[in-house]
Image (cartoon, rainbow, N blue to C red; front, side):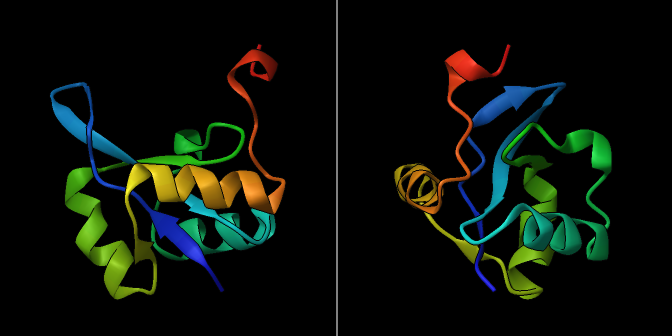
Length: 88
């Protein structure tokens, strides 16, 4: 299992947010998110948006914390990345 979370750098709704992804499969990502109470509404085609305060719990559960560039590199290599132009 390889679930990754990056640093919380994106401000919204009075909080900082990070991305939670799998570099293996969306099934793995959804299973991990569901098991750790990440709301389904937080899913955005290839990742979940997670608030900063959730990160320690996700890492304790096995998510690997990486920098944003590493997360994107591994997501692209997995073939799971949905490009911005394909999101519409």
